[in-house]
Image 1: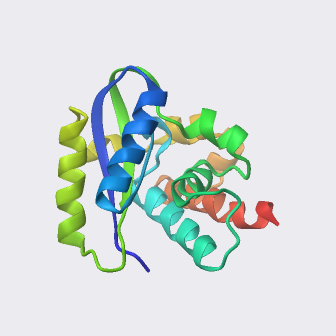
Image 2: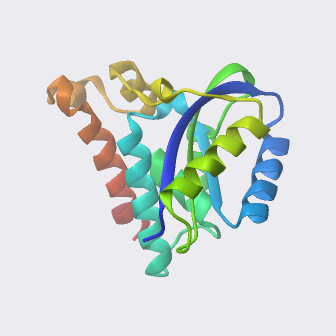
Length: 176
């Protein structure tokens, strides 16, 4: 599997179309895949790690539901099976001091250290500040994600992340 880095950041986003275009340019220039999501819906870095792992596996097994690995990551991260629902749910929002969850997936010849340097470059290019705390989810995050109060009551707080991981894994079943 390719090496990847999950990161959190805070910054201003004024135009999501321009952001997507600039991220694609950065990706092309560095030969990596970059995806950013609304950190308000990320429930721990393991949430994004799981989304990346599922998306990469879908790519390797030639069963992606989207045309790009970046969009496939978004699909899994959102727990949705269709981009028309995933994008409004998990896409980054316009605003000042926005929480951003991100992933950079490297080529097979890139190592963790090189990807960490690319993440620093990426964050700097966009004028963001790296902040891993934006990736820490809580019960409010889970509710915004679409987990019901009933589901929350069935799990101890230290297992809340498992509810998100289940939603990520369910995308494979929903895609069939």
